[in-house]
Image (cartoon, rainbow, N blue to C red):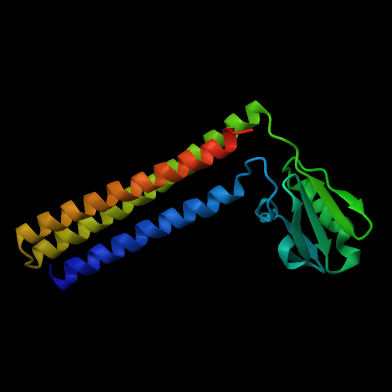
Amino acid sequence: MSEEVQFCYDVTTEQMEKVVKHLEHELLKIRAGKASPIMLESIFVDYYGTRTPLNRVANIATPDPRSLVVQPWDKSMIKLIEKAIQAANLGFNPQINGDILRIIVPPLTEERRKQLAKQVRNEGETAKVGIRNARRDANEELKRLKKEGISEDEIKEAEEKIQKLTNQYIKKVDDTLDLKEKDIMSI
């Protein structure tokens, strides 16, 4: 395999790997009934006039699977943090307990579980599109290399390798989605 074709293959592998990593990160944000500090990742607080992520102004912990504890570093921020969590519309009702906020994560209803499973599938479809786009880009690059004089047999072989790689990453996405769906649907 020529250096150009190998480079094309490596770039495609890297792009597909990034798509899978992004999917895994997005799936962490979808709650499966267990409390996780990642659930509050999208919350921003007005910290002295600057929009700041919650995890930069407070410590977030999970003392047990059904609750979160938010402990602001600046005690005067507790009311602002409470309002930010309520405004985020995550279905949480934080309670101030001294100088900490306690959030009880409610159990998921069957309807909510189905919505989350649908959301997981949508994230999966987005990831698959990203993988297919990487394949398309690689095939276009291979066509360009063919015009530059790389042999037709080598291009054909590289296209087959790219397709195998695509199938491998699509399966990886499906396996990841199945695991997350089982996690969501289990009570």
